[in-house]
Structures are given as structure tokens and as C-alpha cells.
Figure 1 (cartoon, one colour):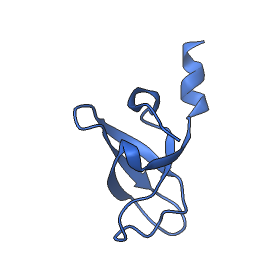
Figure 2: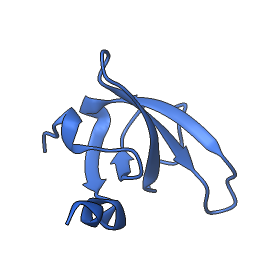
Figure 3: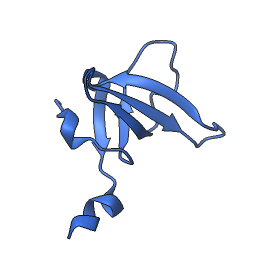
Figure 4: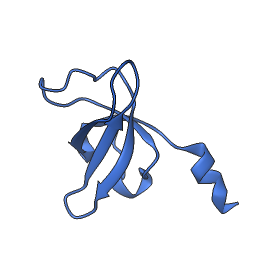
Length: 76
């Protein structure tokens, strides 16, 4: 599935596949920063005993996207 960079926002969650250096592929990570020019995201994991683990991923690594509904409904 292809995603559009502008549709993934800070506060959303993404599931991604990355290098073998990152072993938490089976969890959703929270997007905490976006790099517009390079189309990359900084994602953060705070669960399953992990505290503030951060990783930078490219748009094409995103496999699933969960929109932050509480943020999405603030424009209604």
C-alpha cells in the first residue's frame, strides 16, 4: 500500500519495516516529527518495556498507518 507523506501527521501511528538493526517491527510507533524535504519521519516507541526509543524512517518503509482520531476531529 502506498501512502502520501502529507496524510501522515505528527501524533499518528505507523507500522513499518526497516533494517535488521530495528527489531520492533511488530508494533505501531508514534510519529513525533516530519522532515518535509526528505520525506522522512521520526517515530517513537513507549510501550512493551521500551522507553523513548526513536527511529527515523522513510515514507516507503511505512506499511500501515493509524490516524490519530482525536487530533483529526479538532477541525470539525
